[in-house]
Image (cartoon, one colour):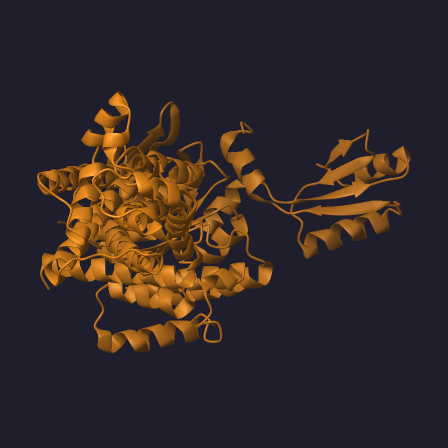
Length: 267
Length: 312
């Protein structure tokens, strides 16, 4: 077998291991779905009545209109949430003796990380499906064509891959499981300072500038455009650029951190 | 490559490792002939685990060279990894997988043919007495079961050189003896074993050669018999009610060491049954009344006291 075949085979083995872990320990997945669902219900039913009436550039008023506006942002929040779960998962895994065993075996080393990343992307897609169903239940009415749906799935997958690599790096550099759960917190807050919950036009000066120039706003606007037909403009290209950049940073950082861990195992 | 190198499963020269200012390995040489059992004996913190980590490619050495199964650990780590199996001090099993799944995971990572995997897994479960627990997640296993599974996982890839880092630490005596038997069975198949332990008895039971590691240096090396000759034997400690009896006993048992404060006498020359009987017969003959008796067997402390001149 060639090196590439070995690399694929080892990565598939590691993926199977991670999927088994998710099945055996489903509470983490439930928690990852639960958080965005709580946000969705809270914002639609508590704030939706007020906010929904005052959305510039959004058709309709009230809770239903706000559900439409909110849903794409909540889907991105779901993806961020699963990524933070990955940081915790990988930090926990690194404390296990079996990782040291893997390092003494003639395997394709990055397969350990690939298994985590692919597993996490699958987990986040499952979470996104759940959250989408709940969103449809509270009045989200996308008007996307099949092609636009496909593109939306692609955008979510792209965001998930990028954030997961970043989360893997954060999980590897964290010295404890606790710090691994705290390090990605800023990521969870970023969508709030973007266009997830309100249009950026409604924000005060400096905050608005920040919201317009951070990665989550173009990503959310792209998704919103695909699902609801709002204008996408340059947001699509900017999103792809951000995701590529974040993925590359996360990948390089994660690989370096993983190799550095070899140099200082627990004695 | 010369013939003598091939016959050596492990050859290390002047191996050095430090973490910051803390020197962990201070230039050690190790030679393990293929098919033999080598024990690295030392207290906690002596550098045993670090030696295993360097030889098993887990961490790079700061200096020196090491070859395992004919391959340099720094230059061809993957060739070394393909030839070795490591059972570390800390359990290296996946707690969320079952026993059988753990073994299957190893089989997949060794790229074993699917056709042989089932047979191999079933064999190992049988051999390590894990058939009943095969479908339980290992989080439910006892310490002894985890250690057995750990060793079974190490064997999935048929390694030629096996590292066992304190394999019986924390095990009850019965599990310890069972594991010793597993190791002996392995040796019979011709593999080389590199064992670390804090127990003199364990090294004595299993190893062909023993090296004593202290403070990152090998302070003595030899066969168990050679090392035991270097170690003062055990002694018998007698305690008395009455100083007069202590005086009489000290006179009767020449060469013994008296402890007047405790009214005790340490009698050297071993602590086995024959020696015990001889000492008691002598006391009987002289009509000396002994109040208490204690037996002190030689242990790792004695070995180290002898080797390091008491600087511990």
